[in-house]
Structures are given as C-alpha cells and as structure tokens.
Amino acid sequence: MMSNDRYLVDFDTEKLEKEIFDVVVIGGGATGLYAALSIDKKFNVCILTKKGIGEINKFSSVNVKKIDTNVCKTLFEDTMLQGAGLCEKNSVNSFTDDLIKNIENLEKAGVQFEKSEELTYSDFSEIDGKPSRIFRQQLLQEVEKRSNICFYEESEVIELLTDNGKVCGLLTLDKNTGKLGVVYCAAVICASGGYGGIFKNTSGSEKSSGDAAAFAMRAGAELMDMEFVHFYPTVLYINGTTGVLVPEKIRLNGGVLKNINGECFMQKYHDLGNCAPRDIASAAIFTEMEQTGSDFVYLDLTFKDKRYIKGKYAELYEGCLKYGIDITAQMIPVAPAEHFCIGGIKTNINGESTVDGFYACGEAACNGLHGANGLAYNALFEGLVFANRAAEHINKCVEPSNVKLPHIISKTEGTEEAAATAVELSIELLRTTMSNYVGPVRDRETLYKALTTVMNIRNEFAGKKVRTSREILLKNELILAQAIIMSAIERCESRGSHKRADFPRVNEQKMRRHTVKKMY
Image 1: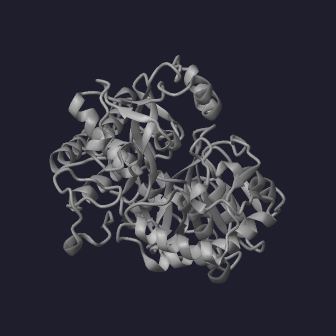
Image 2: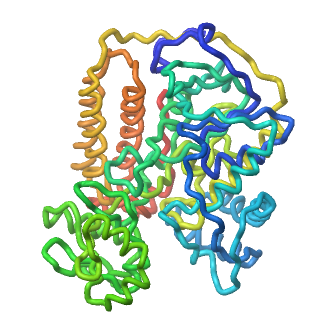
Image 3: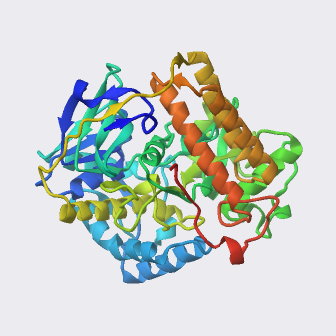
C-alpha cells in the first residue's frame, strides 16, 4: 500500500526492523498497565512507553470509601448532574456498574485501599494532582510477573498503521538511536493521556501533547468534545510558568483570592465567592487577569495564624519556600492552568474507536462519561474501568497469533528542511496562543485569533520534509489545536468547562449535542 498524504514521514516497512505482537498498549501509566493485565494471558502483549518504565512516583495506598451499590447510585446521579446535559447515560451506567468489580481486581493486584465509612467518593485526596501514581507501583509489580507482557521503553509512536481501514501496527521512533521501526499487531489500546501539553499553562511539566489523538485522526479516527478542557484555578505561577497545584481545599477553607491590586473579586462572579465551583473560579480568575493586565492573581492566607498554616498546609509551605515565597507572610501568585482533557478520541463503552482494532481509554479517550465537565473521582477510575472493558472486548474478538504484515510505503511530497529554531519558536507560539486565546474563557474574536495563528504556522511549514521528533510534535499539535478551536467556535454557548464570554448562557435547543471532528 502506498500513501502520499496519509503519513507524516517517509518510510518503507520492508526496510525497517520489525516486531510482532498480538496486542500493543501505548502508555505505561496506571491505565496502560491495568489494560495489559486485563488482557488474556494467551496474547503476547507489548507496552510502549515514551520514557523508562521505572520513572515513576511511588506511593503505597489510596484513600477511598468502600464502594457499594448505594455509593454507585449516588455517583451515577452526581456524574449526570456535573456533566451539564452532555453525559452519555450508557457510558455512565457502564462506569458505575463496573466500578466495584475493578476495585476488587485492583485489590487482588496488590493495590491497598484505605477504606473508611466516614469518607465519600468526593473526599478522594489528590497527591501532586496525579492520584493514579499512588497505585501504579503495585500494578507495575504485577505486570512484571506476567511472561506474556514485555516493555518497549523510550519508544515514541509516530503513526498508527492501517490496512484497508483496519489497524495492523505502529510506526515507532527509538528515542535512543533515532531509528524508525514497525510493530505489527492485531489490536492497539491507547492509554497515552490527554492533550494538555498543547497549552503553555498546564498543571504539570510532563503533560501529554496529544500525539495519539493526532495520529489516530490521520488514520481516520474521530475526535469528540475537544473544546471541553478542565482548567485548575490555582496553580503556582513563578517566572512566567505554572506547574505546582495549590490545592483547592485552601481556597475552600478560607483562602482569599485577590487581584494584582490586592482587591477581593470572587463575589462579583458567584454568590459563594471564594468557595465557587472550580470551573467558575477558573473563569473568574482568567477574566480578572485580563481586566487588570496581569498574568496571575493572589491567593491570600497571611491573615491566618502562622502555626496553623505550617501545620495544616506543611507540604505547600515547604514547596513555596523553595521559590522564595513564605505563605505565612506573602500572598501566593496563582493562575489557572489546563488540568484534565474531557475531549479525546471518540470511543464507545468498550473503548472501540472508529478505526477497526484501535481502542482508547482514560484521558486519551472520550465516550461521553464526563459530559461537559467532570468529577475528579471519575477522572481517576475512568481509565481503569474502560481499560478493562477494552481488554475484555479484545479477549472475545481477537484471535491470538493472527497478525497481518502488510507492506506499507509512505512517500511525502515535502522537499525543504525546516529550521530547528523555527520549529521551537512555533511550538512556543502555538502553546502560548492556546493558553491566551483558548483558555478558561473564550469568545469569537480570541478564537479566530488563535485559528489565524494556527493556519499561519501551518502555511509556514507546508511543503517541508518532516524529519525530527520536534517537527512531528509541531505537526501533531497543529492538528489538535485546529480541532479544539473549531469545536470551541462551533459551540456557541457556555456549558460546563467551556465558557464563551459572547455566549454566556446554555443553549439547550441547539447545542445539547457532542462536537465531532475528523480529518477526512
């Protein structure tokens, strides 16, 4: 099969090193590891990771109430309410119905749950904003016991290979040698995370740039609800960058948000003031920053007793001291930052995308569970529940040792090489544009400014050969940026995490629907 525009880079599979597996899992986080463990032992499974599998944070347990049918019923109702009218009932039912089973599976795998009858699912405590890392170590230990599972570390997926519309493998880049390779397989489970890295302001330095959504789109997959992005309202802002979460419990337990002029402002935006819901707080902070011409606001704790602050918020106190901020005497500079992607690769309740043999789960996927917003608890367990469903579907529908090895040649039309400096400047410009114009509050003018920037960058690199991983990154981010912006332009309303200053209300008559984007 020859392709002139289907793939980004030139390659000939006959000339590349080959590996063959029944199933490939993209991503070595908790979702990817659990997906691999849920696949039947009769399959040969490979887990592809961009980084070394050992580069993890190790925690021992997770604090969550013992789940029973009553809790699941409440969770169903709260999820439907939080989703602002866009939750898919079938997805929410599948999630709550399977939750108990999957928690029991995790316990069998060695994950320790600290159960307390006083806690509810909403009391789940995040650690560094990445709760899944708490039990990732236990899952990793279980995976290492399985002889049918292997790891390909520091291997970047460049393309999803297809033959007559069906997945047949992956084009990979070895980050150590710089060589391309091909991994043939009968099915792929994508658990690579969301597209938060496309925003300059994110809640972590290791956010995914959404490359999987981009190469899935090139393969014919549909993306859904890309305009819905969850912004965490209070992320530490230092030297022009964000990254460290300032826990919401501080704002909800007496911390006061003030603008750059030292003025309290939250009461202008919500009756609950500083205790307003997260999406309202993010939008209010963003608006206040625009009106005062500042890149941040302050979270003030200085009026509280010093001993109380050092005891109650010891971790934050020590963390801020590293940046020269004594939160007992100085206000904390904070800004909203991307935290969770609600949109993603469109799937059904079994993780199936619109490309035969390609599955997605977790933050990489979108099946309507979250609707227009999302509960923090669901963000953690969503990936695990639907990873298990995807694996069970593969167990039933895929035959072991039945992998096809089609010969694929890609010859792109570009001739000139892109300058490395220009690529880096364009990545920086694109991410800054997304944070400034497609952030917590958007309008027609800012969205079209962002779209113009995307098209200008695209035109600048049109006709140039794609040779490096950074050029691939830029091409992928341009695809995703356009999908996000066009979806946001389309949604002429404010619903859930999508806020339009020019359309401040929900439009139930015309906009109670999902937005779907595809490349071809």
